[in-house]
Amino acid sequence: MAKIKREPFPLKHEKGDAVIKNIGLIVTGDINKPTLNKSKILVKNGLIKKIGDDKTIKDSEAETVIDANGMMVIPGLIETHAHITFHDYSAICQAMNWMENLAYCGITTLISEGLHAWGLGRYYDDPVATKANTITEATIYKRWMPGSALKVVGGALILVRGLTKQDFKEMTDAGVRLIAEIGGGGLSEPEDVMQYIKWAREFGWHVSAHASPCSIPGSSHMSPDKIVKIDPDKVAHLSGGSTPLSWDEIKEIIDKTRRDSALELSAQSNTRMALKIVEYAREKGQLDRIVMGSDQAVGLGLQWGSLWMLMAQVASMTNVPPEQVVAMATGNAARHFSRFVDMNRGIIEPGREADIVITDKPHGSAAKDFLDALKHGDVCAPALVMVDGRVVAIKGRDYQFTQRAVKINGDEKDLSTYGPNVEEYLFGSPAPRYHKWIL
Image (cartoon, rainbow, N blue to C red; front, top):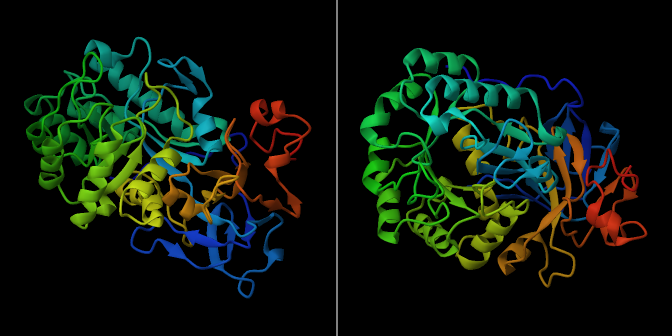
């Protein structure tokens, strides 16, 4: 079954050209080859065209020249677990524009694990409404990027009674490719869902399972036995959603699920369990299974720096090198989901979409650089965020600045002296196309 391509964004989603120079190190997002000692990247028409140095890439090859000032380049982060609505609003947290702010913090791709909003069919075991809700979600996010910056993989089906194979075909034709976490709401018993899973797999869908006790009314306690029978492509929030299963149950799930089934850590979960999962995966030679999500926007609140915090925790409290931890939040997710949806990003290499973050240690950190800061447990931040070759931000809203600053066409974007007062820094828009001091 063909993957659904993102439809052309009708307003401001032009593809960008740029040269990024003076790169200190490229952290590739590839867990097997996590760093690349090259100093320049050429971006053409929104794609990474070439990686090299001053001899192979000239500044004159693009109108926009970004000086990374010795900082590191990483892929845009990929958040693999979010509960969204039809637009940029969280019905649970009652917050506006939370999704666009993820992009401004360097999380450039968001993957839905099912809608949360008033009146949805999922809460009423209503197959007609549930199908319509899921198609609407998928269609909106094929055509629209929150903040003109965030790529959302929408259209995650909550399983309810009464769905037919024809429903799955119609949803597939509309771009749906995800079964949301089984057990997080809707049907969850293996005998109730296996026919649906069979149909979904015939159409090339991704299947996720909620690895956790009950979290909200209507969710289920998903035991290892249930999860193994479901045979998910991703084990959702294995570290807890937000409460985890026991360690023995978690180990059983890791051991008995498929080698290519992703194991998801959540920023809103049990940190101790997350660290144990990573170390156990490292011992088994399965770090490529680890992906990172947050489970937002739910009652634990919004964390625009969610994956930055999770990367710092894992890098500072396990024996995994920080460059491989970055791959868990980028390339691991891209490679996993690219089997099901259009996901040509998450790794810094020619031919990939130019979703790129320039980053450094936080201002005042005792660390030497970005990777050392992660190893110290410092929560880092972007100095620049690029999506499809377009600069979309140089800071997240009310987010910390980096030790060094980028230059864009020779103009330094130093946020440590951001305008004449702190209010513009804290409350002004982080998007360069809006802010008078960045333009």
